Image (cartoon, rainbow, N blue to C red):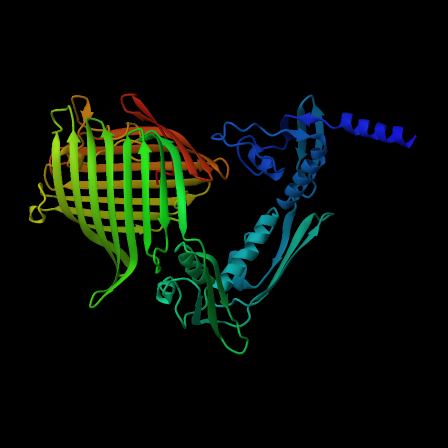
Length: 565
C-alpha cells in the first residue's frame, strides 16, 4: 500500500510541475519606466534575460514552484517602497505566468524626530510616502557626514515605527551620539613587497594632524590598489579613547604582478580586431613596468613594447618618472597606407599638483598612395612634445559627472635632424553632468598646425568618437574621393543620455565640426549632424550604437565599446 501511495504522490508532483516560457506583469505596472516597470519587477524576482550581445544564450524558463517566490519578492518590494497594503496575485495560462499587482494605498510619514544639525540630510518628508530606501539613505548620509568630519566612533539609533492600522502612518526617530573628534596620527606601513615604502606613502591622500576623514582613507586605499601589485591591502585606524589622535596601520601583501591578456572586439572605425599583451607590473621591483603586445585589425596591425619607471631620482630636479616606448604599425587609411615606426621617451614630473609629461619622439613614416595629393615616400620626423591630462570623471567606463581636459604640444625641428618643421597643438575638454534621469555631456576639440604638412600629420574628423554623421576620418575636403583633413580643427559634440534602466540608456546628440585648409583661418564650412543611439552597460564597458544624419540626409552607423565622453 505504501508503495502505491508513494507512486501516487510522485505522479501528482510530476503532473503538477510545469515549465513556463513567458512571464507577464499586470495591474499597477508602469508602462515605460518607474518603480513598477517591467525591468525593475524582473530584477525583484531575480529573473535575468541575456543581454543583446550574448545572442547565443536562450531566454530563461520558469517552474510552477517558483511562482510563490515571485509573489513573496514582489510583496516585499512593494512594502519597501511604501505600499504595505499591496496584494500580489498569480495565475497561469498555457505557457505564461501572470502576476497581478495591486499596490493599494501608500503609507505616509507622520513625524520625524532628529537633531537639527542632521535634518538637512533627511530624504524623508512629513506627509510624503515612506520608502525604506529613503530611510536607509538618510542614515548613510548622516553616517558619511560624521566619518568625513572627525567622528568615526559615533553611535546612531534609528527607528521607523510603522502603524499599518488607522492612522496608516510612520513615525521616524533618529538619535545620534557623535562621540569624540579625531585627527590623523602617524602612519605605519607593513610592506612585504619588493618596493620602497616611499612609493607607497606617496599614494596617501591625508596628512598627519588633519581632521579624520574616511574619504581620504578610501582614496589612499584606491591609490595603492591602482598600483596593481598587491593582493591584500588593509588600512586600519586605532581610535584610542584616551587620545584624539588616531594612528593608522597599512598592511600590504604583494600578489601576482605578471599578467597575460587577450583582446577581441569590433567597432566601425577599425572593424574586427584582436590582440594580446603581456605586462609585468613590478619588473625588478619599485613598480617598474615592462610590457609587450600586438594588435591586429581589419585596417592593419601594430606591435609594441615599453618600459616604465615611476621614480627616478636626480639631484636638483628631484623625482620624475621615465617611460620608453617602441612601436611599429602598418595601417590602411583612406587614400594611403602607412608603415610607422615610433620611438618615444617620456619624462613625467608633478608640479603645482598636476602631472606634466614631456619628451622626445622619433618617427619614421613610409607612405604608399595612389592619390596625387598624398605623396609617396619616407619621412623622418624628430620632435619634442609636452602633454597634460586632468581627468576628474567619476568613472572611466560610464561617467555621469566630472570633467576631462588634455593638452598636447608637438614641435618638430630641423635642428633635431627632422626632415620637416612644424608646431602641432591639440586641446580637448569634456564636461559631464547628471540631472536625473538625464546625463548631459559636451566635448570640444581644438587643433592647430603652424604650417602645411604632409597629409598624414593633418587633423581629421568624423567617426564614432567625433562627428557621428560621417564615417571615420571622412569629414571635410576630399581629393579624388579621399579626405585630406586640414591644418586646423574645431570638433564639438553635445549629447543627452536618458537611462531607461540601470544598464540601458538611449541618447540624442548633435555634432558640429570644421576643418581649415589654411593656417589660422577658420572660414571653411561647418559640418553638422544629428542623431540618436543606444547604450548597454556590460561587464566589458558600455556597448554603443549610434546613427548620425548629415544635413543633406546622408547617414553613418557606428558600433563600439565605451562612451563618447
